[in-house]
Amino acid sequence: MNGRSPTIWQAMQARGYTRRDFLQFCTVAATLSGIQLSGLGKVVHAFETKSRPPVVWLHFQECTCCSESFIRSSHPIVADILLDYLSLDYTETLQAAAGHQAEKSYHDTITKYPGQYILLVEGSVPMKDDGAYCMIGGRSAEQILREAAKDAAAVIAWGSCASNGCIQSANPNPTNATPIHKIISKPVINVPGCPPIADVMTGVVAHLLVFGRAPELDSQGRPKEFYSRRVHDTCYRRPFYDAGLFVESWDDDAARQGYCLYKMGCRGPTTYNACSVTKWNGGLSYPIQSGHGCIGCSEAGFWDNGPFYQHLPAFPGFGIESTADTIGALAGAAALGGVAAHLVLTNVRKRQLINIDKKAGGVAAPEEKEGGDQ
Amino acid sequence: MAQKVQSMAGVRAQPRIHAYDRVYVWELPVRNYHWINVLCLMFLIPTGYIIGNPQAVFSANEPYQQYWFGIVRFTHFASGMVFFFNFLFRIYWGFVGNRFAKWNNYILMKKAQWRKLIEVFSVDILQLKLTRPMGRGHNPLAALSYFVFFLISMFQAATGLALYASMSSWWFPKLFTWIVPLMGGDMAVRQWHHMAMWGSIIFIVFHVYIVFYHDYVEGRGTTSGMISGWEFERKEDE
Picture 1 (cartoon, each protein chain N blue to C red):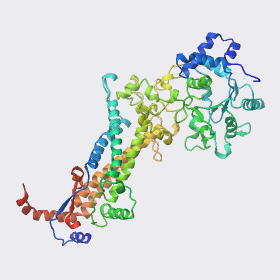
Picture 2: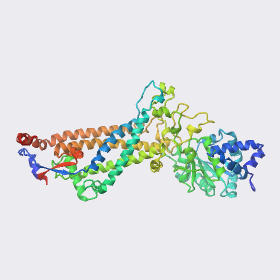
Picture 3: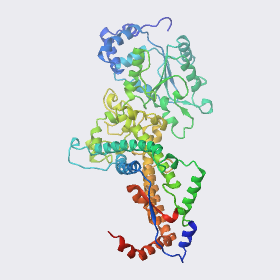
Picture 4: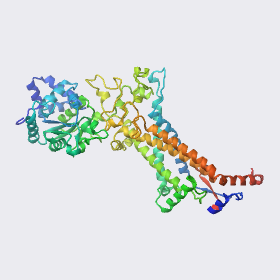
């Protein structure tokens, strides 16, 4: 990695790709980052002139499902280019180097290319007990993250762990697992999902490469091009929802008909992701298409919003079966009971007060009526 | 006066006829707010509950021939909008309305209001004492309950609009999207919105009952007051 590194086009040529392959790659990358055809020239130009940015891919508290997802990107050429030519200088899962060699590679990258390398972080960072729950090379995840993020050109949080804590931060969060945007002060591109969709991951990286800056983000730091709509809004079962046709149990006729899974606890209406558009495994399917509701894996705290097969989450402190409705109905019944008791109390305690005027009315009424009954 | 009625409530009290003054308390905008609110809640609560827990419908019709759930949702959103702007209007009227409609009835800031609140609580709720001097307009306990209901209204409007924002291209609901990450996602907002619905149901139970109670015990036309605007005051109370 000494001297000026080759451009992506040069790197592709060296690998034996043709110009046609290169243009195909550019087209796919442009499509993934939401650029229309007229902007293709820009993309081609970017990949012809820009050198491959060095990449450091850190793994903290995670299960590596994000990496697994990424290498299954449905456009092999994109994955190939991004993975092979992105110059992945350090990633625990895929690097050839080990031990001191790997550490050296990491240090070389962050010292030689300050302000140039892209930092990809997979996994949350434990903040409790000085981060003793995730140590790499004798240093805590927090120390490594702070050091690596300092001079990074861009920071991407891969997956729900890095974006919102995911299962490690689920109640009671024993290690105080923390998403990275709460630790570093730099803007972080959050790409939540457990794992995120491979094509979304490559799309985000492609956007960074083409434009040299982060895509437009929403208030939660997620790229708007992939996370601005709910899974529900683009779901092919949505017409059943509007028609009020719902699956009532997993083995009923409605399930066979492919009705909406809303009542089975589908989190589609509260989950922002591109699943029902991009789908998974090369556009093959996505959970709802396979007959299972969305579990909302790209939403913050989704593990604590369970059970997954219940529309309303369990009400905290009242057992897993009780929802806001159970508690509400009980409180409503208590209110009615209180009111009924008060009614009885009033009639006992204030009876004379009420009756006294009743008697007066009884005495006075005939006289009153004679004069004023018109 | 309290002593007088106290003794009336005794065994030897003499029945007598009361003379009443008719007092204008609730202005038309206040009454409008009240009844529009009632109407909105009559739509909002059932539709909201159905949205959270739709009925199982079995139909031989094709899905494209049906839209009942869409209509339920539309009704909820439309009445929610009316509810919200009606509420905004009421806040405005809390500054320009008559003294019974003013905001300082609802936010109890004077010691006298709190003293009165304790008195109302002991006479009307616990009934430790039988009577208390009557004032015009809301008593502080009622006013406090309306203030809590205003808070619930505000909360429902804000969380409802935040949830609605993702289904709308209008800029207005998007002003509320900051609530979503604050509460920890749409799922949490939905949960809170649901719980606050139960809060307003419980408010309605207490409110309707206590209005009937006042009318029954005090005979001052509390219920009809919200229709006509006029309430009745015993001459001897003045």
